[in-house]
Length: 283
Image (cartoon, rainbow, N blue to C red; front, side, top):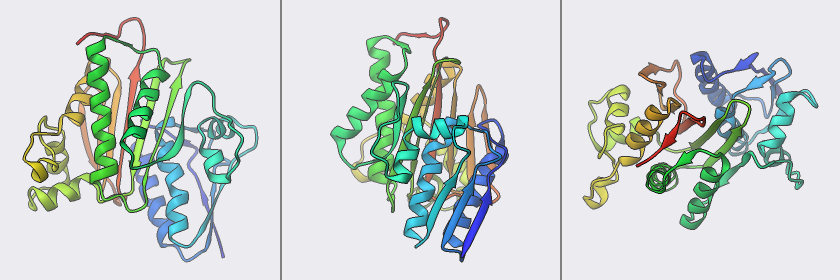
């Protein structure tokens, strides 16, 4: 049995409906009775790079649900070319040819290895010519490292952690996202911190400097990653998104919290860093 799912005309970071659609899509893939699923991108000429990690993870959810998933994209379309450059095409098809270029951190499953995470973050910071002082680069490195550390070691990611990054030279933006298949930020905080929290309360708690469920394990103050990264994005006038369980959080010069119609499984964290002559960082 086959199920064809028509993808929206556009998957935009600025359209909240995109996040609702992707959350519902994840559940459809897991719960549907059909054993072959086709994601039809024929009418979708554009998918923001911020969604690549999540879109790639859908094939993993299908496999673990005993299903086959296929991505239908018009050959030689801009989206087809982007899927190749991002490494998503090779991951899905098993093609050993490297189609990526110097503007890409290819889509991949992130292994639970500290040295690999460090190398991966180094590659992220080298990808775009963002102007950073030595101290500022160290701070940003630590922020991103804690996000990976949370995703790999503390999310209880059942089927792994996936990441992808892209430098967009025409608009001078670095886009990066990491998605884990774990318990989710609100659920973890409700379980370990306060069961009376709403998902919005839990997300606000996670974004406060010094707050981290890891501090319960060793008594040490942690939790600088999300708050400091948000502060960096604020100065940069970039964007920062978290989608976890039933809550969507966005920072784009102001905080936005919106509940999803259906919760996603796990957590997707993404950020956009701008690079132009007005954004030079000193710390």
